Image (cartoon, rainbow, N blue to C red):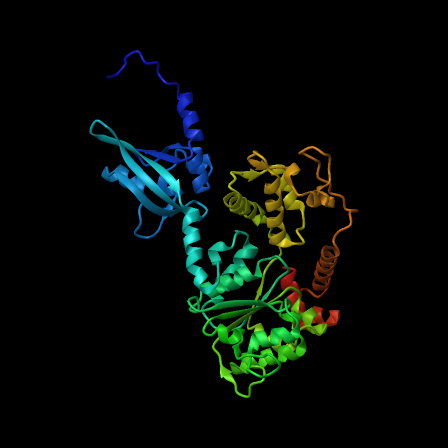
Length: 463
């Protein structure tokens, strides 16, 4: 029975409920334009209110071919849709998966809109895909690579093209740039994805152990030796990643080269060769030309491995991606720590853009993880949450409150690698200008090969 004397509920009540309720709410009018869009829905879809409100739904979001919007279906057909899973994309191409309850809004005999109540299962979908990949000991695909900068997109495109063949690949990049992430993505994107993926860090074991591990052993080859297949045989039909290939001694590099060329391996102590079908991906964390000149990498092995060469840019060359990476790591550690941190303070983010990140993406992740260990109940990472060793770096020193002034002092001591890279960049630009950008003449005047100069220009992203 209705009470005619009930006090009307102020709109502020509804505004507060929409803002604080931990479920997404999205409503459109009879034209399909968004009228109601709450904070949780914006969080689920990674959108700003102004990008969605009063906009046509289909102008903002896109759907797979032959798929549809549950909201538009409820609006146009008058259907009530319960517990429907929907996968779609926001205006930046990010994939979203939700479970929806969707209802038409009716006034008399007219449908005047539709409303959707959504639960986010995007992370669950990703976990399912990752678990499917565990059968090949891999977790990463190209979807796992965070970043929209042209520098990282170029490498992703080149890597995707490399999935179509079985050629050897050399991945070149500083420590912490994510070389194994690319290696796993290539494996999972190739026809070998259902076969084994085996990774071995060549610097992790001494030479006498790494040889037996790679090539296998025959029983009686030495005291205690047993009949055991090596990693090449274990990776049959799949991919073998050899990390830090430049740490192998020259004799092992020669044996490795023979196995790659002949597509056979010979176990230690054996007299017969065994055929193998394995794709080799190798990584190196230094300029391969420098590694060759200093005797850490055989030239013939380099040419055999670098049929496809991928140069992973350091974080300092793709700073546009820092915001996306920070948000990704916040969400990752929210899940691991059971927290609800939303963002990083803009002043801290601006400092991140100024910092050179010698440890690359790995260092950024460690900083975010360290900060979230220091957070109590706050929703944002501030200066005071940053690990103390990080705050003590020159670029981050300031006063003791949460808003210290950033120091941009040209007299500060830079890391040696950064200083030398700046010197090399400026010098090569000067030499190229003097020779009207003629690579052959510039290389001759510098006393280096044309190939060496081209590699350095590519590494320094000079055209």
